[in-house]
Image 1 (cartoon, helix red, strand yellow):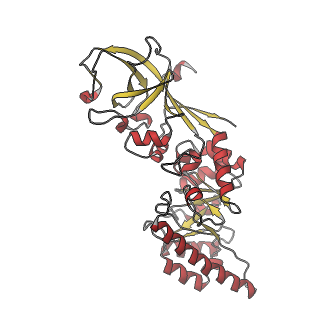
Image 2 (image 1 turned 90 degrees about the vertical axis):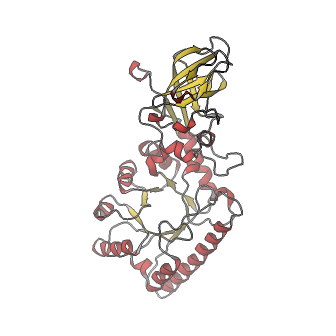
Image 3 (image 1 turned 90 degrees about the horizontal axis):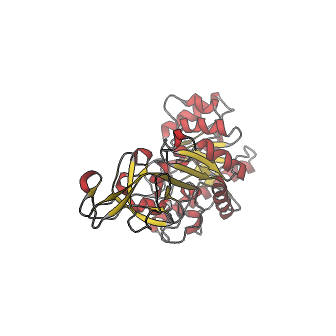
Length: 384
């Protein structure tokens, strides 16, 4: 590492693990295929890093949230299918055509605008249609979808995909999920019947693909799997089966350098707000990483609650007080004398400290840990 990078925490992205995770999910959605959700900069690891690796593994369909992300994804994926989950960006409909992007339409206004655009630009990519089966966030209501099917809108506008979004598929035997699966299944039958009738009449060979399953659905559900699944969190190592052993490989590893080791006499405090009080003569290691790097401030310890941990010299060491903007302090008193020195690295994410555990220790979720991964890290792509 160069001297200029010696203060930076080191983020290693294991692309072979990312690829293996996609292959597992793809196999579990057979005979359908798995796409890949690469929104939020591929959950923090980088669109330009993740997307080509996933494409190399065999993924051909990708989902982002914003059209700006889609443009970046297109630059990295010249031949892939790219869907924009947040629909049509106001005033930027031409960007979808120029970059060969597919909007996920979720309102009557978007549906009308896209139909007009497609009429004038028949070479534009097919759009997706989002039906709301219970999330009440984006998407049209099922009754509106039935009207659109009856009117022949789907083949007329060349809708290539129908999707919905689970509320709580990570919870086994969840009643809301069961209702969503039943609702979506009934709508799928209506679409398929309408398309068969059109085909018999010789008017169109249009087929609408179906997508419902997310990361957790691959493992917790016996139903709800269709042509295309949309895994996100599990691709990046998150546990799609909370409370059970994680079937996914870890993708990221975060290590921060020790920049100072100091002795703190008993009864003195460490850090802002005096949230750590040395109960004995203590040894504190200070790491070059903090909330400005995306590590959550709430990961710090307080007298009323334990905080996060790091692994150093093969041992777990608790945080001593607050996570600061640029620094984290560890209590290493229990380690052998002299076993830690400036320049050593402490592991903040990886091995036994997976993203779900790190999220829980900070009172949040692993998704937030991933998507907040900072810009100051020395980033290393490994495994491919």
